[in-house]
Image (cartoon, rainbow, N blue to C red; front, side):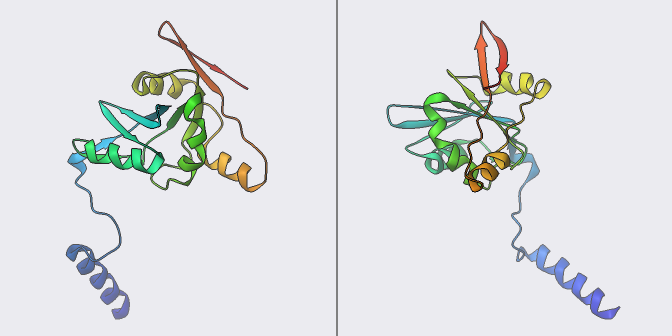
Amino acid sequence: MKKLLLLVLAAVLAAAAGLLPFPRRDVGSLLPVRALSASYGGGVLTLRGGDGLEGRGAGWDEAMDDLRASAPGDAFFGCTGELILAENAARFLPDAVRDESLRPACRVYLTENRIDPETAADYLGAHPGTVTLQSVRAAALEGRRETPPTLRCEDGRYELLAR
């Protein structure tokens, strides 16, 4: 019993001193990214996370780093539920699958044009797709291809099309 109490006390002291490998975040500075949209043009990948969050770069990691650096707080992707890739940015899907800051349960969609991530998140919350980053990863490991559904927006109205 004494060993257990000593272990708990040591963990509490280590946490207080900041020595544990868990990231410490000020909750007040978190900027939750509900949906992330990606488009590609002119050799630049543009990621938009709503609320004015935007990152640009030659590749996925560079664009994510730019989004984090330009955010007025701590961009938080632990709650990102939707990843919307314009068809010209679909080639970055393998990079998104490897990105550990995105949840494996994040649903993936393709689109023909730019989509506003904020309004799309509202629609997709009510009409979720079935393809996730995790299912894309599993399909790649099994040697098959998982095709995300297409999200179409016309005149401000969204429609989800299965492929």
